Length: 161
Image (tube, rainbow, N blue to C red; front, side, top):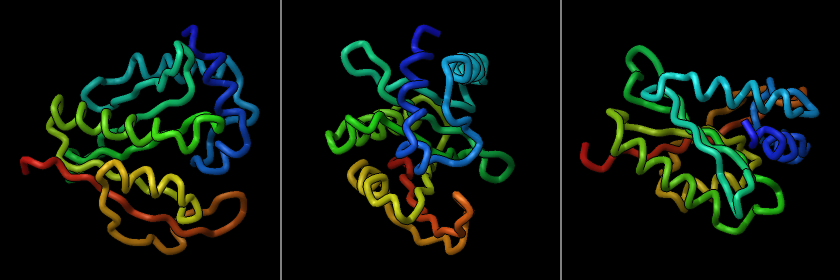
């Protein structure tokens, strides 16, 4: 819970929120951070894989993957963000690799996918560097800030399949 204030500072950045899905309050408060951390701590650990990204004992971001349902029950959707001052330093690439390795070794998940906005070339590059394959563009797949936008589909498959 002590990380909630650091989390709030990171997510309250408009440049961060422009690359995330809607639904996060802006500005994001420490109370919002406490609520998020509480929800993650109480989630089923076989369905929600969530970790703080920490540098020098300070939370600079978050990464999580959520198990899907029904016929997609062995698939997880990946999401992440990192403080702007840490962009381009390779930290997120390493975090993506680590969470994928963790999930593939500690669960029955076979496929992890992410759907970055097509304009978010940095996020696409992170996924590519972390071993994800580009599978295609999802045309007119979202409405963000009143604009209809495309998203890209990336996936990483468990190697022992």
